[in-house]
Image 1: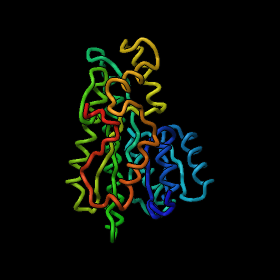
Image 2: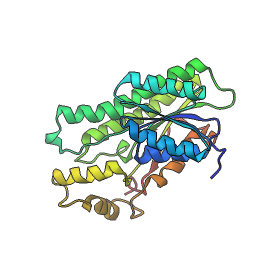
Image 3: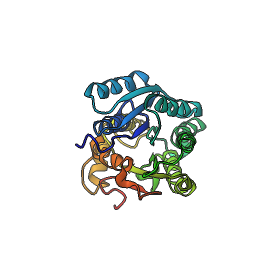
Length: 269
C-alpha cells in the first residue's frame, strides 16, 4: 500500500463508524489521507479514529452526525477545515434499508429511507460544494464528491422498492451533479456495491425473514450468491475500498458523472 497515494487529501466520510464507511476511512488514512468520520454512533466513530491515529499515517477526527440534518453536514465540513485546513473530498456513504413488500410500505418506511439515502446525499453535496467554492479552485486537481449508489441504482427488487428509489435518486445526483458542478472544478462520481457482508446486511437478512422472503436467517445471502451473483460469492468491504480510494485519488481526475459497479456481476445476470 502506498502511504502517499492520498497524501494531501482531506476527506469527510458519512456513516463511518462501521461497515464500508469504517473500512474506507482506515484504507484512505493508510494511504496518507486525513479523514473526518461522521456518524450517529459517535463512540464507534471515535474508536475508528483512534485506531487510525494510532497507526500514524493519516489523521482522523470523529464527529456526531445525523445525515438527515443539513446542519450536521455543515459541522462535518467545518470540522474538516478546522482540523486539516480544507476539504478535498466528500464521501456520502451513510445509508439505511428496511425491506417491505409493496402494499406494506408506509410513510415511516418511505421517509426513513428517502431522508437518509437521498436527502442526506443531497445535503452532503450542497454543503461540501459551498466550502469547496469558498476555498477556490485547486491548481492542478479537481475537488471530488463521491456518492455511494447500489446495484439498485440500476434495478429494483420487489421487497426493497423505497431503497431502490433512493439509490436511483443517488444516480441522478451523480449525473446531474456532475453537470452542475464542473464549472466549479468539482467532479461527482460514485460506486455501486452489490451484496456486502456488513452489519447492515446482517440486519437486512433478519428483516427478510420477518417479511417472509426466506425461512431462516442466512438463506438470503446464500440464495443471492447462488442465483444472482455471477462470481458466486458475497463481497466484503475489502472488495469496495480499492475503487473508493481510486475515486478519491488523482488517478480519477478525468472522470465525472460515473457510477462504477462493484457487484460481482449481478447487473449482468
